[in-house]
Image: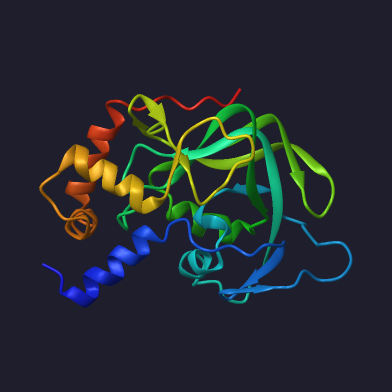
Length: 233
């Protein structure tokens, strides 16, 4: 049983997903979004990684990359054509229902492309037990700083795409252009999932009890039963 202050903090962290992101490209270092250096970026030893959810937010990166505070990481604004960011059919270790990618012809998803070092990529991977690192081929990812990528790595859900009323659901905080799917905020999707799985529970109790790994696994199993597979080609 958690006290009221701790419960409020847990609820806030879950419902704030996918967290605030800058409206520009930036250089991440030690929890801060700094201006990019003038001139070309030194990307030696780094490969592009698509960040469409929390991995683009300085507050989330501060938690994930805390052991490497002095290593900077470029974070470039981008657009990914013919994809949407939808909710995944799982519950995260911190109680959120997070996002994943889904092919959606005509949609354009706002995203970032991060360039982690090998050490930073290892730390990011360790925080993604519900995701696998996948190479997306023949995509159109346009960078705000100029240029585009035809292939890029991305963390994608192992559990498929959440469905509600037989439809996938867009992440409202990641406002894709030309979106074809209904969209919900994190609070709204948590409420809908709570109503399906544990309608007797308050939203606070539903979210805070998800920090129990067995509870999260049981809920994820239920959500996976009606999930749609993600399409990348």
